[in-house]
Length: 536
Image (cartoon, rainbow, N blue to C red):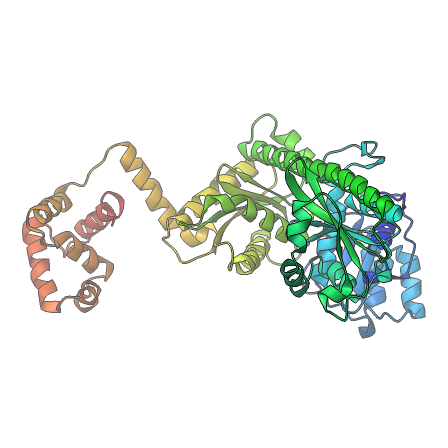
């Protein structure tokens, strides 16, 4: 079993193995671990934290720019660059690897970038649950599911996967190539393919798995797929009466008493680590929420909280995200998680948490062209487009701030923008204050008027009183005419009445309201009252 650090490059290659990755050139035995995963975009300014693992999506090794890219990444203390295999190891590329210290890795055909990203993020996250390096469960690093998978595989002498209740692969051992094509497909996709899951359901495998304590055996001929040639043996992972997931071993032969006991022992060990991961994730989420909340409040502990988030002395853009009205607020944590994953793919040091019914992101943005706010707005627009099918999100972008006071000001401005969007006054899904400033002022004037118990007066009060007695629609008529800038035809169309009817009503407006519609000051006063004191 590998004794490398959890997030080292060597550990990534050990655990993902020949199924996904191949080392083309470079040294994998670095003393320090990987700090972040970065998706490289040749058309955008990269933001690279030290010790990053860079995914060169779209980088063409045959185009001739690979040596220059490696040397550029070396200047940022990058650990490795992953590009699509096959990679021709030319003398120029070999020299660039040696000079830069950046290892070059190939992503095998058949594996997708999305799959690789999910797998590596899961491995990096194992070190982020707030446990010390010496904390262990069953002699293994606490919460390290890949180490657990390798230990169980050694115990059973078979490649195994650890899966959740939805048949998503949480971790897997080495030696997966010793199984069969269906197992490789499951590992690469990080999910049991739907056709296999449906067949297992039809056979009653999941029913027996979650009902009984004993292992369940699935023979290849029962599944009826040519890709499955090795027997599967599964056992549920339980914590009391709760089923946390399952262990699946690809191994032929009889499941005797010794193998059964080994699986039972393994399920207990995996349960401890799954519970530790769940508890650690909850603790980490609460800690991050507290730190971000402290920063946004700007109190005495804000500077220290910023440092603990790793964002000291950084210029930050505040983004705030929410859900459109009618969307269940239970989805707020989903929104926070989705935004966190989206931002960290481009800006690894960003911090996101749900605070008080709103999701806030602290986004350090470094650009050479344009403004930080424009870059943040582009990232936000991409996020809204990606989650639109599941989460009806809206995002506000505030100006960049370089200190605590700037961050607090940015948060207040983002809140103003998000409120306008939540009220539904715009069709925008991503906005800055310049986009909605007038509407924000109108809402704030309404708040002030409500606090003072201000009520319509003068002409508007007389018209409202008349309408209440006679249902004449004079206020509605005046508002439509003002919105149409005095265009009788347009106002009549908006009210679905004849223009002559509108003219008659306008005459009654002037008589009942005692208002001169040719006077710009009286028109403005009427419009202001209608917007602030008597909104539709």
